[in-house]
Length: 82
Image (tube, rainbow, N blue to C red; front, side, top):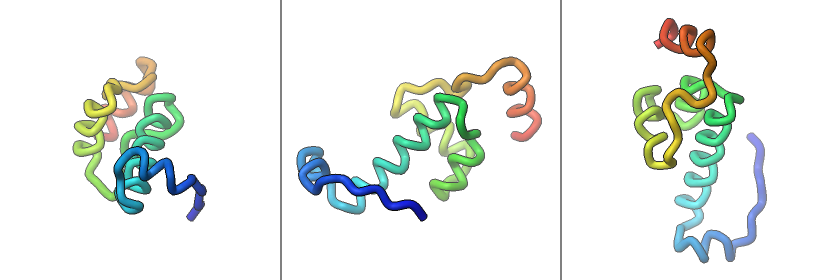
C-alpha cells in the first residue's frame, strides 16, 4: 500500500471526514488514471472494491466518458473482456 500525505486542512476545507477524504482521493485518482488510459475499468473497479459496471456508472459523477481514451483496438478488447 502507498500512503500519500495531505494537510488535514484540505479535508476540512472540503468538509469531509478523514475516511471520506481518503475514499474521494482514491476514487478520483482511479477515475483520472482510467480517463488517461493508464488503467482499465476492470482494474480500477477491483482496486475500489466495486463491480466494473458500478465503476462505469461512477464515471458520470466525474464527467468522464465510459470510453476513456480508448482507440478502436482497445475498445474491441474492452468489449471482449466485458
